[in-house]
Amino acid sequence: MKLIVGIDPGVTTGIAILDTKLNVLLVESKKHFSKDEIIKRILEFGDPIIVSCDVSKPPILVKKIASTFNAKLITPKEDLKIKKKQRLIRDFGFKEKLSNRHERDSLAAALFALSEVRALFDRIDMLVDASIADEVKAMILRSEGGNIKQAAEQLKKKIMEGKLNAVKF
Image (cartoon, rainbow, N blue to C red; front, side):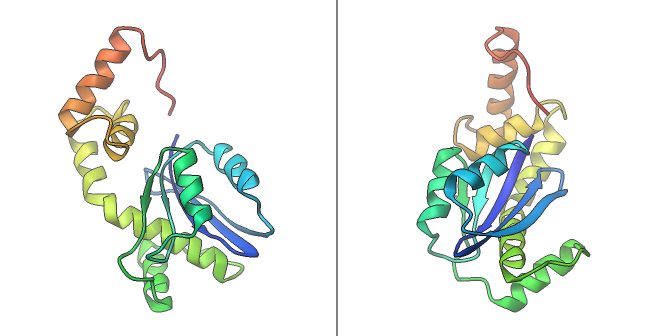
């Protein structure tokens, strides 16, 4: 499954994981969450294609995690203000209680990233067979597939040639 991950690093680190179908899979925080623990936790849910944070200059930890997964790093032009974070969460319709600001900030970061790619994702969903849409999204974000049509054709060719046995969903 392809994922969008928001991270709020610090002594207490918040992490939020969404799928490309707009489902919130995880929002949690933990003190002294190591890079390896974060990576392991993310892998329990799937393959991140986007990693994000709520500040314009991403912390080293966020950069390293994005790099580890070859995921697109999405950050705001300006640090997200508390009201903007609250609006993102409210407008998304997330109703569960968040335990702390780290969870709020990580969820807001993931939702911000989603808002940045939503039009692209919607276009891919309209143009590409649902069975390969997430893979096409990953290829486009990772700059591996040119435009949507080219990425879909490359993916179908790999499947037909047996170079890609199965697409995980």
